[in-house]
Image 1 (cartoon, rainbow, N blue to C red):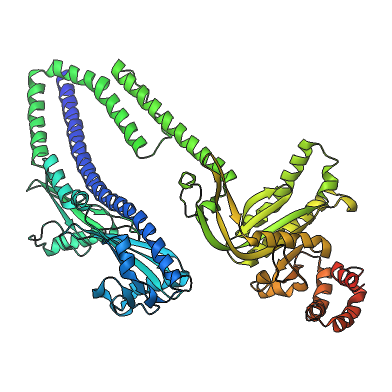
Image 2 (tube, rainbow, N blue to C red):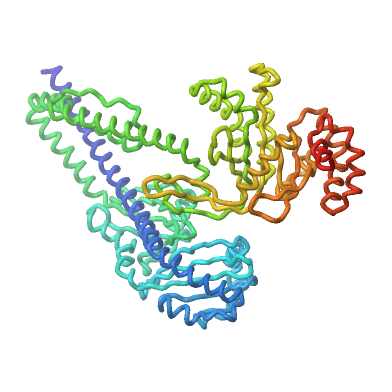
Length: 635
């Protein structure tokens, strides 16, 4: 007994401390969860407003069609646009505005705003408007609600193609008054107070420590300092007043604001908890522990030890595992427990849940990677889609891009000596040597057409020329590495043109693909086909040449004009010889100006003068196909 009683007392004390800690941890967990739920509710309010915004977006887009049509019909003459009739056709909920390049409303159905000058009353807003005008794009604004009437307003803007005006549509709706009332964070906060007896109050502050849900409350200096500290740092702060049995938690509700949504802004939420109940529970726990230990010192001690080993510990371990999974940690092992059939069943269920989550994540990751092999992620970016599942038949965008069209020389002669399997293996190796240069210079593959490549470059045409240079150099290195005979050496031609095109999806509901529709593609293909005739690797249009950097222009030369099928206007074409060996580059630079003069004179109908220049160049015909072609033209 002398040994057993002190041992049982110590066990009782240890069990009390463990229970004390568990109770305190549960209370702290409840506090943390309440804070997360309140901030989560705030985020939900934001999502609710975003959904309302999206529900009005389609109306805005539909309303712009007749508005734009009226502008085009009037030939861009604002005074000839009958906004009143247009508004009557759209509905009283709409108001129409036309804003000039100075930020002044010069025509509107809302007479109070006529003549309003945004450059004076809202300079930053005017900067945004002018950016939309210059870009000639569509931009929707966030929605705004009127707390008194419950009306919802939303605006959208469209820059006219002539860059002169901004067309603006405003829509007002009262149909969202009831849904908006349910998105009141003050009511949600009150609901949390009613649900959780330990939560005494919820106060909501903005960054300036101004309370949002209790206008009669006046914060003191200490409270203002706490609110601003949490708002600036974003770190949750907890203050305990043990004498008053109060715990106060300050947490920041941080939202990501976007122009096309509505946001109440970041807030600091003060949660005041009453700790008297948990303190009373701790005191009661101590009393009960002493009483139980005194009366049932032997039986109680033994029973406590058994229960702690068979029930409490396994459940706590499983609880810790579940928390780790909730935080995204899927690498840890679920403890193997066999204290009871119930605990064992629970452990198995948690293990199956973790395995299923891991498997699903792996499947999604693999699926996304597979989709990117068939639909370039750049297409999604240019179509302004976040995921492949967002893409619909008919999605399209008008853009200005450079189109690179390349084709292999000698492929037919080489492929005839190969089996089908060898042909595919050869082509895949060929593409693997060339395509990295396209991606490295900001381009992406639109499609493979046999041994040809069509690539798009959203940025400057200089990127397309750099990619072409690297592709040809890679091909030359590959030729050296496999030691092909001269007659079987691979060569390639590349044509590049820049212009407007439409990028989108075509097909039907069950089978569609991304594609590009434009004369720009036809021109680049035509330029590529001329490479063989002129013995060139890279031929670009004048539109591309004008946008090259000075170094690239210095390694380019005008070689002829061509008329693309279906067109009547001649197009100047330039050879870019950046991928030639140094000796050939030196020669071509030396007499590039003469060839330029030859082409200019010839197409200025000065054939005799052109023939004189050609005579000076004739000595280069043996090593320069361009000169040889001009000699054939003059017979």
